[in-house]
Length: 309
Image 1 (cartoon, rainbow, N blue to C red):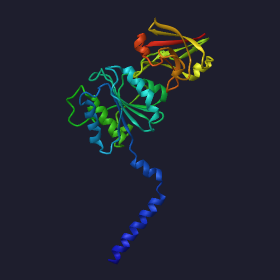
Image 2: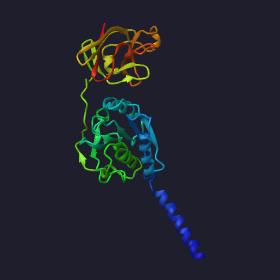
Image 3: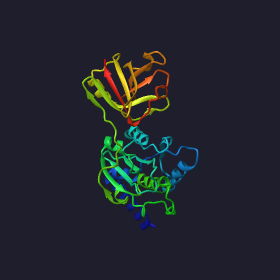
Image 4: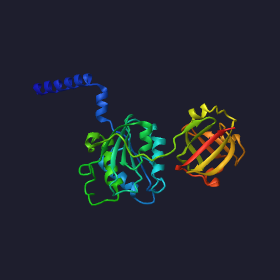
């Protein structure tokens, strides 16, 4: 019994010594699990999203799963790309995003994992869905998913639900720490597919750019014109600008309106210019739907100009 007590004491002392000399960061890193954030165009009318979450939960029952949105318009890769741009940088580093807006599912379009320079991960099809975050956050590494190793067991005959069979499965394993980038598959060039669009630019008394997205709930029209570029135009609250909106080269809308700090500075139904939550120039109607009323929409083919009076 005495020898047993000595052995137990020795083990306890050794454990204390190891805990003192083991860096706390190493201990935390060993137990670190990252969030899994899912975005699709599936909607919530059926069980598709639930099936993806079930796969992720099956990988790790402590998995932290969140929804970005499942209301991307059907097949609208561009809007999906923008929703990633809008939200990704507000999540902690290491977050794994799974994106499924994939009209080319089952074709030879690539299935990839992209790691950004800041340590975010994006899992999904290489069809333009990750292009905007790649521009904003930079690309550290891109890997092609080796489906022979990284695929839900028993799904080999399924060709039309990569969101469940490949992307949710790979994303969950990556977020839980079960695999690393080098386990994904062969390394590719550090670039992903991009969807061409008009970049913001400043020329004389005019600033112009793309209309990437709408503020869907209210019909406000967002642009990719940054506040810094607008300020270089000399924009001050109360200034009047001529706003022109184009679909490709066709003028859809033209009107003068004020640049204001808040919606209530103009009468109900009147147009205004403001900075949205991303500090990009946007236009709206006070308590009305600018998009519906003026038939103005968003996407790579839509552009806007603001000309200082």
